[in-house]
Length: 76
Image 1 (cartoon, one colour):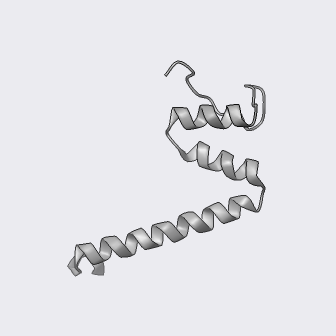
Image 2 (spheres, rainbow, N blue to C red):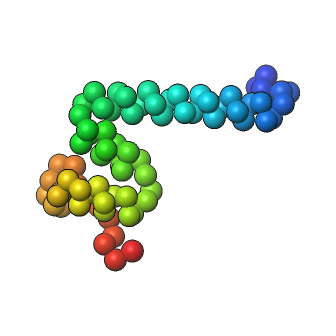
């Protein structure tokens, strides 16, 4: 049991959302330290969105044998 279980769930939800936003911002910034390609790769990699993976490959003109190429279904 968490101490948050007894707190107002709307307040807890807002706090968790704020923490989530900050974690994503920190994660993105760390990835950007490695460069834009790497940061974009991490976002596309974490996404379950087939379209986004395809657009990433197309934007960077990646082919299946390239290091950052993401598998995607072109017909979906």
